Length: 135
Image 1 (tube, one colour):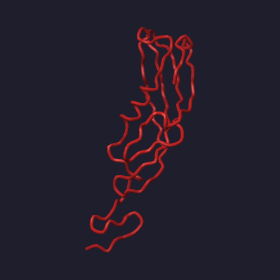
Image 2 (cartoon, helix red, strand yellow):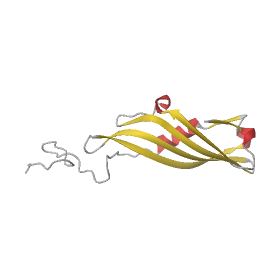
Image 3 (cartoon, rainbow, N blue to C red):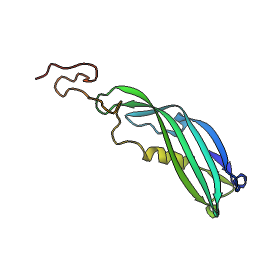
Image 4 (tube, helix red, strand yellow):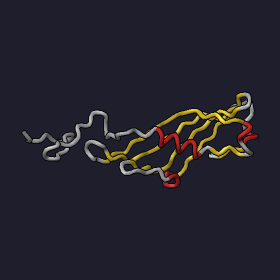
């Protein structure tokens, strides 16, 4: 997302944008971003700073760390970024900052659901869908 700095005055402005998930290359071994990344940003000026309130919605195909099933998650993240007026040029570009926030907020372990039972360590059966006969 890119916005002309002179448009950001005392009054807050809102900008929405959809970006193809594939252009940001954020995939990992257990998460694939699909569809579009939806951005909704509010920009305002506070003294010598530009304040950006950002809401990001992503769609992710996740491989569960416990049961290895793949599921689709819709994740919403919101955060605020401040930019010094003196360090910003004619345009304020925030894509790198948004991408960084998304990646920094990745969970250490990804689960298909909060109460995932995982796989049996003996027979490997998915305990979410079946009970095993292991002793």
